[in-house]
Image 1 (cartoon, one colour):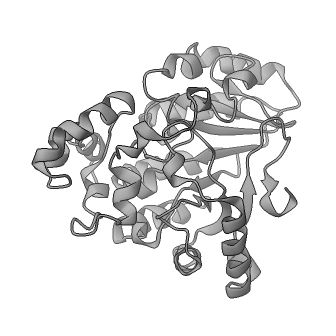
Image 2 (cartoon, rainbow, N blue to C red):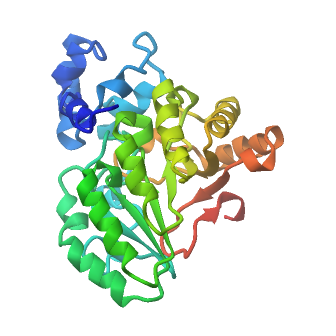
Length: 332
C-alpha cells in the first residue's frame, strides 16, 4: 500500500533552483548564472519523477522544453499585459471564483502546482501574483455558489486542485454536495502526468465517493508522458468510476507534429482516457517561443482528422476573452 505522505516527500525533494538543475545534470554547471534571472521572474518547480523523463542528451527533448526554464522566457515580445491572457481577474465575481459561462464556474482551489510548466497560460498569475487570483476565503466562494442557482457545474482549478491534502479536498467536495442545484463537478489536473504518486487509492476513493458523476480532465501533451506510473494513476482513477478526458496544448517543438499527436491520442485511449481538447496556445507573457501560428495548427489538425477515427480526434479550440464557449479554430 502506498503511503499517503509519499507524494509530499517527493514534492519536498523537487528541483527549485538553477543549482538544483546543474546538480541533476540538466543544465551545464557553467550556465547557472544564465538561468537564475529566468527563475527569479518565473519560478521553477520540477518533481524528480518528471525530470527523470528528460533525455539529457537531447536539447530538443519535448519533456525538457516543458519543464526546464529557457532564456527565451525573458526575451519574448508579448507584453506584461499578457500576464492574464484570458482576463481571469476580470471575470472574478467573488473570492476564488471565475465565471465565464452561463451554468458553470471555476473554483480556484489553490495556487499550488505539482510543476511549473513553462508554457502555462497562468504563468504570470502563479509567480508572485497569487493573491490577486486566490485571495479571499473558500467560504466566500461557497456562499457565492449557493446564491447562484443557475450554476450546475463547478470546475475545480488553480494551480492544481489535487495539490490540496485529502482532508481539505474531501471537505470542499462535501460542501459542494450540499448545494442542491449543483449537478456536476469537474477537476482539471496535471498531477497524473507530473506527480503520479499523488494519485493514491485514498484520493481515488475520495473522488469517487461524491454524489456527482465526477469528471477528471488530465493534461498530457506528449506520448513520452504516458509512462508506467502515469498509466497506473489513470487506471486507479478509472477503477473508481471516474470519467477521464484529456486536453493538450499545441506547443511549438513539443507536439506540433501530426505523428506525435496521433501517438498521443492512441496511447491515451489505451489507458482509458478520451482525447478531448487540443488547445491553441494562449499568448501569455514568457511563452511566445511555444506559440504555433493558427494556419500551421489548422494544417496539423486537418492531417490529424484524416489519420484518426472521430472518437480519437480531439477538438481543436481556442479561448477568446468574452466568448461563452471555447471556439473551434476552424470557425475563426
